[in-house]
Length: 491
Ligand code: V55
Ligand code: FE
Image (cartoon, rainbow, N blue to C red):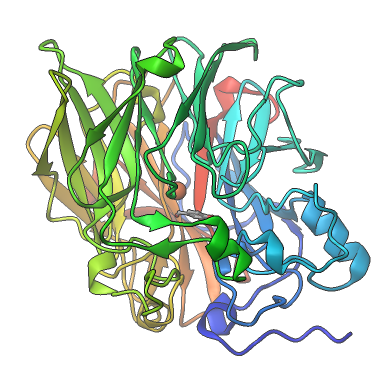
């Protein structure tokens, strides 16, 4: 069968699947790579191999492609490879798409084994002590070779220790203890309320697991952890067995659902988990959480007032409201007394369409400096038709915010360019918080190619200090991770 993609916003123009693997040595660099910036920037995102079985399927359901910029001695190498998920291998063998709509097994071709993982590994890529994991929240991790990006395990279960059927795309790693804290939702099966919360020590041994039940099924895309707590917000994106049986996309937005924050003491048992009523918003991403001396918890997050992902319809079948999906940064102050209460404050409200990150070493320490790309548009990635069109004239910026004062400083990344999520690279293993660089891959819509943009995080007023110019469009990115060279020979 000839390969032909539908002419829709998510698979057209800049966003058409590129479908090739690549290796470039010694990339073209404008400006100068800063001395001391050494390591690897791993990224992952969708890049469909075959036209979708259903033309109305969404980019979130595209095959995961991993890429890496390796930076050392002022030079940069680039590579991009497909992640060989179970699904990828089955579809390559068939020469066509076998899996149906986003996270809906009922829409798969009957040739797909019932036990096959739906996972596309297209959401996040995290590195920990030599282990590189590509993640999708509906399935177990996929383990990659950090040097070659070869797929080592299409279904990595932590040497038999992963009991859950799924695994979050946003686990948290404590830079000081080496603990990896994670959760899994729909963890015993599709549309179920079961959640597993777990942690692994630096040696990779599972040291804690608790099974809890969500108040209702929802997309719980991210979490936060402190030395003592795990925090998991619910959202208004929900599903049900009936919805899946009807052949729909996995999620629909129900504005009537009451948002809750799952609060689980680390090391605790199932009965210790609490669900505290939360502000009416959809906290898709967290920044970090901290414990205050008075016992309250502070959760900084990115949230929207309405449907956070307009690719998903409302439960009544109407299309999503784009304005309600606009995301801003917020601070939740969680008081655990009695039933528990959460007070919400704006955080750095000058930043619109935020996709925030911090220096990952400070995830469990308490942070001051946060970073985000800022587009002034709803989304840094073309997950809906209106955003895809608007992005072509977009011009985005790097933003730094002070979590203590809310002050924001920005640096434009160049006209007609829209940046994907950025990462922070510390200046050295002992650098203090905020000393380092920001980098992100930008789409240059006029030139129809991608570039890696680098700025000094502490001196954003200097603007872009280096661009690594790729002679093609790189695949779309959802999330990425920076791995400093001092942590691994493999990077
Ligand atoms: C998100 C992204 C996903 C997904 C669920 O941004 C949530 C949130 C790229 O795939 O499947
Ligand atoms: Fe995410």
